[in-house]
Amino acid sequence: MSREEAAARLAEVRTRIDAAARLSGRRGDAVELVAVSKTHPAEAIVPLIEAGQRSFGENRVQEAQGKWPALKASHPDLRLHLVGQLQSNKAAEAVALFDVIHSVDRPSLIAALGKAMAASGRRPDCFLQVNIGDEPQKGGCAIADLPALLAAARAAGLPVAGLMCVPPDGIEAAPFFAMLQKLARDHALPALSMGMSGDYETAIMLGATVVRVGTALFGSRG
Ligand SMILES: *Cc1c(COP(=O)(O)O)cnc(C)c1O
Image (cartoon, rainbow, N blue to C red; front, side, top):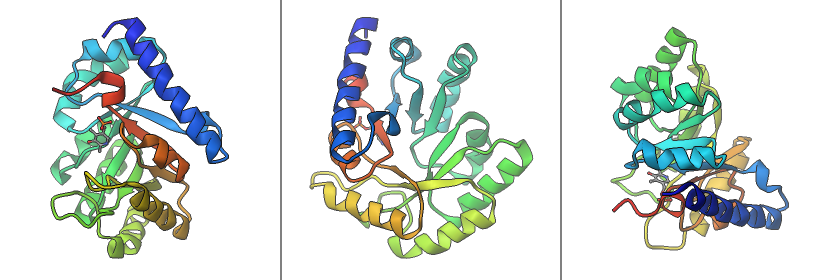
């Protein structure tokens, strides 16, 4: 991807974010755009950094460890988000590398993250992931388990920013976004991580404060 192409794609997504944010009575710059760079090499990421993008997302700790230490060293103001499922035995590595973790979804992981944060002094912002479509193959806690999970995260000292979801494929996402918004409101949580390339404008109109966009910025993952 050339620098011009990266800048054009970024401008297009930001324009759509601004429009959706205005419709929901907010400013576009109140919505954090996370560019999900999973599977894409550093050469594809650098043009977006040069176009001004600062927040990036990965879904695997090991893949991120191969790409991001060097990029972060040359651009210390980058914010790196873990958007994929996290195994408890990778918690320390995730805490060391990421600035935001979107996939906190069970007590064993909360315990591992709490220990890793205490040991390292690093405290990445955390989102509790909710399995909003009740799909067996997906990460996230059951809606009924959210109150206990939130209490456990707070007791372990995790900085809980808000809630995250990945709605079911192939059906309208808006009702699921609305459910997540209601859960966040019920628990007085300010941040909502929801919306991907196909539905980020809908998510923003339903209150998303963080959108996770891959394909619309990088092209298809092949
Ligand atoms: C890959 C991924 C995205 C980005 O998906 P696109 O459809 O390419 O925008 C967002 N969130 C999560 C959790 C992902 O794994």
